[in-house]
Image (cartoon, rainbow, N blue to C red; front, side, top):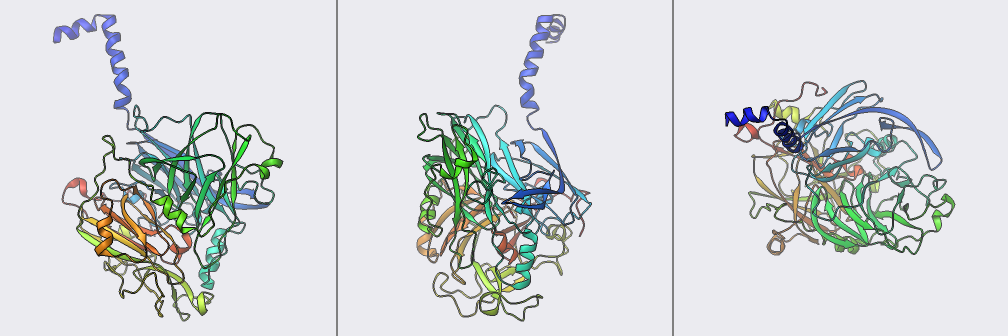
Length: 577
Ligand code: C2O
């Protein structure tokens, strides 16, 4: 051996060879990189729908910058808050394994970053690849503070589908001519529903269906015969959306950064918080030089909603702004077409391959049944304000009749210091306090209770949660998002969940894994996850108005016995309340 090495050192050819070998294995060695970003939160002036206003932005951009990492990378985002408002950022869908301090929901895993302060979100992206996104997690600031978070597979690892010619993030947002903070402030004051948005946007642009917006149209230029991957993100505040491209079929390959068995669809449904990667192959002989890409709301709310349609453009040849209203547009389902939604959601199956196996929990340690929906507070509420909700009450929302009270300090901090008194109660109900016919005639008393109540879980508990929509104040779909975990969607259906019959119909073979799932209108959904990530994890409706009304709870997952099963101490720059 020794003489070999010596001989190599003295031979230029051998040295060159050794160097080449080193270069070849370098990318593997250097695979896990640290990616650093700086987020300067600043006000910037933008004009949409002929309204010019100053909005919170990241680095002056709207939507904010695209963050790109590779699976396994460490991501460090240094946030400087230069606006006149508290802010935090959430990396929606990132599991945050033992990095709960970087999760971001205000008063859950951290105190807000106050004006003038900074905080560095520092975490690794492990075992996930695909499209996620980041957004502010304080009040309604995410209306303008959001962007794509793209997780590429490790270097040298491809997609389990043919590599697309191009990949394009397509973020669907919701534009308010008014200040969204004023909108929610007013709603919380009056107790009534908030004013609705004025437009939906594609990558921040409303497009030709709105007043004076034809020049603010997102255009996806395509070449005939090429395949494009759209990284769809529903960043809207309060609306589930139908999505379609005129004359083009889409192939769904990924949901919430999990590969799915590819399936074709002409109309998609995407809920706030959800992401979906879809393949679109451009026609070789398009029948028109351009086609509309459209979104419109899906809702069964009894309240008002933004019932507009927004268009982007799939462009084979350059189009003048003046003609954009006339290009072929897709026919979207009616706004309340729950059947179309159910048909679409039934398509999702996880890919489940040798390379991407699934470990679906076949049995569970603890079962929970959560009734999810709206409710009201009586007028003599402890909250200051008027009573412009239903029948002179104030709107509220709850799970198991508990409307979540936002604490004044970080729950994770309280948990880490084991100082729970006065901050939280570990007694969130495992079932509704009074069972009723959830999807039938609502009970007479629709008042909610209030509290910061959590479910404590032992490390590694296998959990099943059935979430049941209620018809109190009208059955409607609720996109429930769980922080810190992906969960398997093992079953869903309409009407009241029936443990005896419905459990037998679960898919325990290849259920889709997601971080956000809609509880169907007048229906239920069952999810399973293994509580292997210590910390405090909020689960909430991703319609911001419902979150503001208290549609949230939190799981408190205790440390496991091993050193690598414990939540590390908080970073030194964690903001204080
Ligand atoms: Cu995308 Cu708690 O949120």
